[in-house]
Length: 87
Image (cartoon, rainbow, N blue to C red; front, side, top):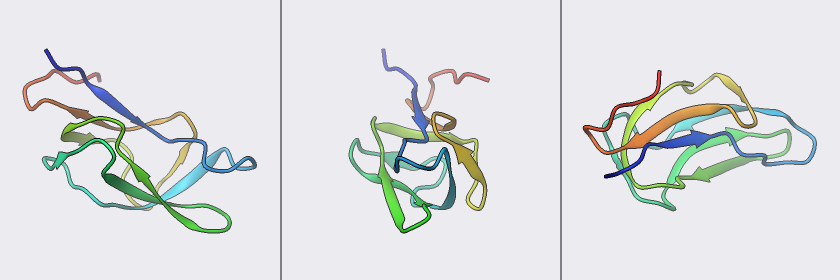
């Protein structure tokens, strides 16, 4: 049995509590390996790539590119193709 991995906005700097997602490097339906770069975010000083912390299919992107997300917010779900997802 596989688990659903929630993709969470990590704390990337000490001062900011939210970041803008510039682009998703994977699309819904793509297979993602753990450690593979998943999306890019803009901080006040740089553009950073964030890696996947789980392997599986990128099933749902909740926060699209161009939107801002708070640290700790669920951005997407990675899971087996048949695994039920949280609402």
